[in-house]
Amino acid sequence: MAAPTPGNRSTVSRKVYWLAAAVLVTIALYTGGWYVAASQLKTTVAEFLGRPDAADSIGGQCSSLDVRGYPFRIGLFCDKVAIDDSREGLSATFGALRSAAQIYQPGHVVLELDGPAEVRTTYGLLTHLDWSSLQSSFRAGLGGLSKVDLLAKDITGSLSNTVANISAEGKSGHGEAHLRANGPDLDVAMLAEDVNATLADPSPKVLPPFSTSIDLTLAGKAGLLAGKEKLDTVLRNSEGQLRGLVVDLGKGRVVTASGPFSVDENGFISGRIRLEIEQIQAWRDLLIEQFPEAAGQIRNVADILKSIAGKHDNGTISLDIEDGAVFVSFIPIGYLPPL
Image (cartoon, rainbow, N blue to C red; front, side, top):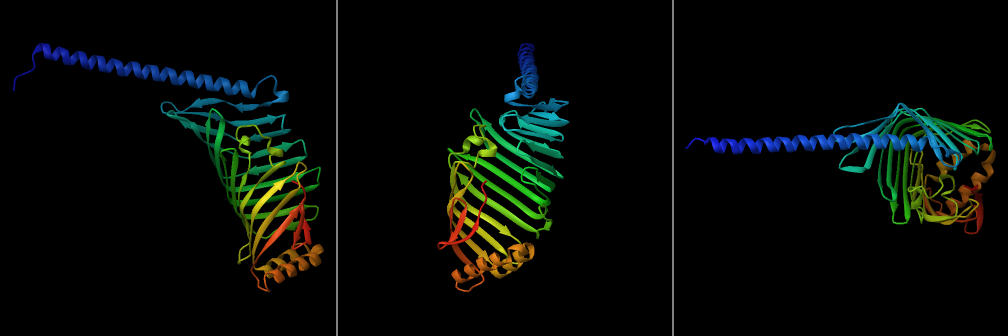
C-alpha cells in the first residue's frame, strides 16, 4: 500500500482542523445560548413574582433563585417559595423547589417541592401540610398547561376554617392528583390511601382509617389549567360526569358512586347518582358509632337501602339529587351542603 503523500496529509489535516473548529463554535454558541436563556428565565420569574402591580395579580418570592442544569437541562431552584394571589384571596408558602426540563422538550417540566406548606384564604381557611416527598410534572404549550401530575408520600396536615368554626387533621401514606385538558373539558383523577383523620370541631371525632379515589370530567373547565378559571369557583355553574367516587373502609365496606351531575351558581348539587354499597349493615353500625346523635336517621336510611336491595347486604340504588336534597324513590334521605 502506498504511503500518504504530503499533499494528502495536508488535506486530511485541514478537514480535521475545520471539523474541530466547527465543533468548538457549536459548543460555544450552545453554551452562550443556554446561559442567555437561563438569565432570561431567571429575570422573567423574578419580575413576575415581584411585579409592582401585585395588588390585583400574582406576586411572591423565590428566595435564592437560581437556574441550573447545563448542558442538557434547564430548571429553577429556590430555597423557599411564597405565593400571594390577591385575585383569588390566597397566599401560600412552601419549602425548597427543584425543577428541570430537557432542552429538547422545554414544555415538559418535572419538579420536587419540600414542605412544610401553609395556605391561607380570605374565606378563613388555613391549611398546614407536610410530606416526605412530593414530585410533580406538567406539560405546557402556547395555550398554557395541558396536563398536571402530582405524587406525594407520607402526608400530614391540618385544616381549619374560622368562618365555619371547623377544624380537622389527618395523614395519608400515599396521595396522587392528575388533571388533564380533554378538548374543552377537564379530566380529574385523585387518590388517597391509608387516610387517618380526626375532626376536632365542632366535636372531636376520630374517623376510621379509609382510602378514597375520585375520577370525573368537568365539562368546559379545561380553562382551569390555562389560568382562565378561578380555583375556588371552578365547580360553580358546572356540569360533568362522575365516573367513580370510591370510599373503602376495609373489611368489605366499600361505597362507589357514579353518574351525571351539575352544580348551580350557589354551589348546590343536582344529578342522578348510581350508588353501589357493600356491607350495608356494617356501614350502618359504623356510622351510628361515629355519629350517635343521628342514629335514628342512619337506621332509617339503612332500612330503605336494604329494602331496595331485596334484603341483601350489598345493593345498588339510584339517588336523585335536587339542589342538594337527596331522594330515593321520592323519599328524602339527606341533604348535601353547597360546595
